[in-house]
View 1: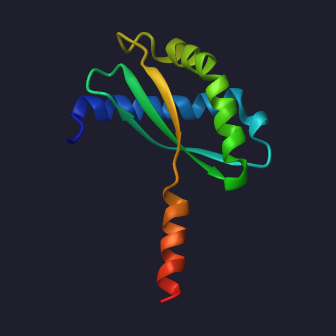
View 2: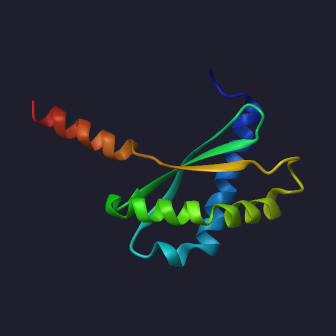
View 3: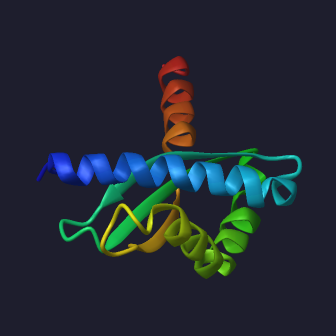
Length: 114
């Protein structure tokens, strides 16, 4: 099922704000890594935001995802302060490691080996 225009608009807002929060408040904690918000998808009731991160190098992904999950309430609080006047409810956040680039690389290697 595809997302509604409202979900897509809200996801775009969340993506922009989370990116800015991480850049402003957490950039020092990502030393030696590149962390990008690759996608955000919203539940139909806009109560849950699934946020996907692309992390390079991949070897740091577990540690960074653990740190993000530990700081989830702080990130949500910052998000609420930034978008609180625009939305009724600040969504719960769920963080996921986006493995799309790694999967694409594996597929390329597999195709090259044929």
